[in-house]
Image (cartoon, rainbow over all chains, first blue to last red; front, side, top):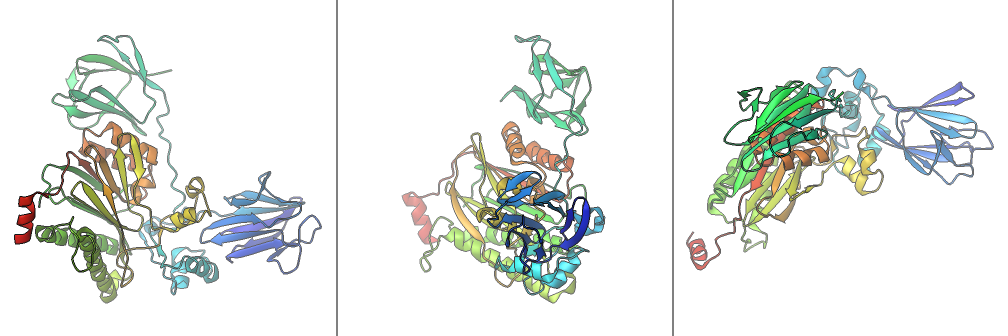
Length: 251
Length: 274
């Protein structure tokens, strides 16, 4: 579960777990996080926590709320964000528990129902959200909350293909012989629609050519490929719809 | 009634790179104009059971019912379109079966599934969905999401709590607010859409749209539209290349030609004598 680390001048004062749906910050004593400093307004800001996500909202404070150096009215908190209130700093820590989640946890799909939220939530995550926050979150959406998949999954990191090298095709024959074509997109089609088309795909493992349509298959280095994707190497010569072209890695 | 030749359908399903078994389930029938995709959830193999029950029951029942009933007509009693009525009834039936199984068998306790069903008839398509399995449409170079997820994230986006951009960073992914088989009663969201020859429809589980950006999905549909089977495989492969954290399933449906309902004099007479 997410927490805040309150510090001043690099001295850690307190750790606060965001267990409630609303956690208020201000100078007055009724706040959940009281900061007794004149630069902080009586009711300065609030953090609204919905399951695993937390949102910071400034409550019209006199001196404003700053996150990572930027003044904000409303902000969707991300791990390691620094909230500044006067001289005080609040660090927001919300580590995706996926690091400790075992592979088996990926399989585990959960159903959260308003009544049984407590039990289900504690089973869902080792550091379970207390019922108050979770039930509040679930209730405010009225409906049954079905926890599908796993909340412990980190944000799906869209892994960038390892193949970041620039590649190109140079036409060796035909009317445009000598022309170069950079392959920048994840998918590039070649050929004439309706006659013969092949596609070159950029994948983490490298570049592949695949037959798309037409009676004849592309020829790579003099050999026709089959219906499977064919890995391309530097300086491979492709023949397609009567045009020869060379595939190469750009320096 | 048959739509033979009006639709081309290709599909692909894969457990992905992380999970050991596939809890997604897909089924389609080009002649009847049906495509069904479900993404199951629930411990052990219960998710597979739920999604399998949903797709099998819905497709087999609808295949039989479409022999007798005409989806483009309206029901005389309720005033509902038959297509809507068929989908609503069969989804309710599947919901009851899954719910009862999960209540009576401890190993299936709490299982459920998302669902997206597309029924094509009379140059139209009726889409019913529950949860976060989606339907997209490619028309010309316009690629857009047709269904709106029943998920916490979508509700937050709708209410303005977070933006689409921020939603990508949310930790509350995969929380659906509706699912088949969880409660005794479920309401499917059902809408009609006009179709045009050349349209390509994509039904997919969240394993695809969580791993592959909408832009990349659209690009794949556009560039590989001439080879639907390859396109389906390519989408699954891209999801796996990007990490494949979840099961990935896709069904692609291309409208090859118009398929208006037989509305002539003879067609109607035939209808009366049925």
